[in-house]
Image (tube, rainbow, N blue to C red; front, side):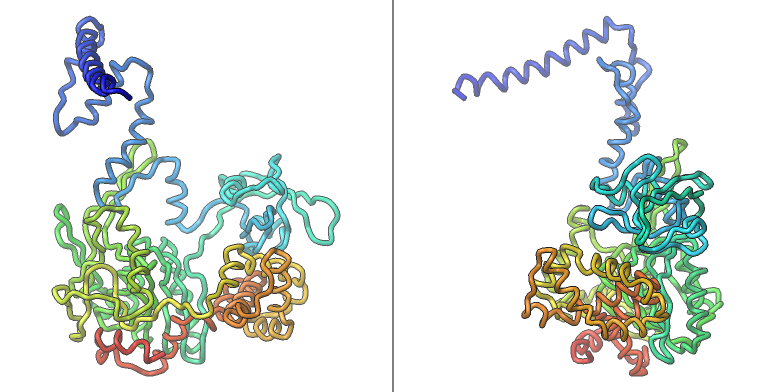
Amino acid sequence: MNKKTIIILPMLIAVSVAGGILIGALLSRNSQTSFSGIHLGASNKISTILNFIDKGYVDSVNTKSIVERIIPDILKNLDPHTTYIPAKNMVEVEEEMNGNFSGIGVQFSVMEDTVRVIDVISGGPSSTVGIMPGDRIVRVNDSIIAGVGVKNATVLSLLKGKKNTKVIVGIIRKDFDGELEFEITRGDIPLFSVDVSYMIDEETGFIKVSRFANKTYKEFMGGMEKLKDSGAKKVIIDLRQNPGGSLVVVLQMLDEFLEKGEPILYTEGIHQPRKTYNASGRNTWEDMKVFVLIDEFSASASEIFAGAMQDNDRGLVIGRRSFGKGLVQEQIPFVDGSALRLTVARFYTPSGRCIQSSYKNGNDEYFENIHERFQSMEQLVADSIHVNDSLKYETKGGRIVYGGGGIIPDFFVPVDTTGNSEYFTSIYRKGLIYSFAYSYADEHRKELSELASADEFDNYLDGKNTLDDFVKYAAEKGIPKDPKGLKESGTIINTQLKAYIARNIIGEEGFYPIIKNIDKTLLRAIKISHQNLLVQNINFNDSISTSLQLK
């Protein structure tokens, strides 16, 4: 580019812009379109601009589609959790919160380009017509879904539909020639949020809550009753990787553990006066000792639960610092079926801690915070959890706890990196443990179906040397045997194999009791529960600094 071009090009652009403005002004004088009724006020500038476009733009424009695209860009300037939900996504959002959707009632997985039925919901539409675990779905109506690179989302869209509508599926079944055809009438399928409740030992129960949906309270109470009837005097409530959900539901659950008048949380915002939520005194589980598991993916309602139990000295919190999502959203519906989730307040624990992590450096950095925690070694070393004395608070009994975003546990348990090896990483990335477990369960379904408990699966599979079979399977899939890697990771691989095989036959009641054996956070919680520690005698500095010694 020569000097003449460098000088002329900016001038040309400037003249073009000015010319465009002048031509626009001239056209407005000669056009039948009038903007005289539109005032470009600061408060309604966006709607005014859209009106200008709608009434005077040179080409035909779909202003509705423009609005759909610009709303998310506007909201990016606010907090990370104010969001716009398009009408097309509202059904899925409501299904998640209501705890059910309409479908055929199967759990499936796409493996080796084939849709394989993992489980069939008892009493659901598929079980009624005779679909079985192990079946391969090769066709849905006229759509072939085998050998065509089908994705999970596509299969879901084909199988889900309005209640009482019909869908025809083509099935390939082991020991049957040809394709079997089933007509299934879609029905309501429950989405469970309490994955499992079982007894770890004679006195200790375990209950895993994966989210807080509208039916979670009922499921939770059912799981707790089951544990009580089995003799539980202590309960470990696992909220790890629970992203939260309904505020109403978590308040109901906490009300079952706290005395009348004890604070649960309060909310406050510039336009929202402080509102305090206190326990009503139901306190059904008054005599149950409680231990709450959290990690960096526990958020929102999970943090409310952990914070209330901690601040009221009602239970010990074990694991790693939670995510730090403490903003209250109000859902505002629009006439087209879409909705705005607008942040209106912040959550505070009973001691006054704000749960929300800082987002002053932007939303992108806020969501990258989890990776930064790994880089700063927070997930690995207890001493890397930096606390600010200006954010020091006291629990009901006078224990010191800290704010600054998220809930810091009473007992820190680092991410478990033992057993990692290049061999394990390679088979993990290819999903070979999961695919082998399915194939093994499918091939040995008859004999495995005679096993009724996780212990029976554990013992039976140990006797069958499934790890050796897996090593051969992995080699066939391109991951050769690695003696050093097996020495480092053999226990983890073998335990996962047994747990996933058991899950494929008897569900979560088979999976969780087996995977417990390599779950360092849960094992730590069990050990702490056996020490008969008094919550009031534990403070942050002691529990964090000695956490590695108490393993």
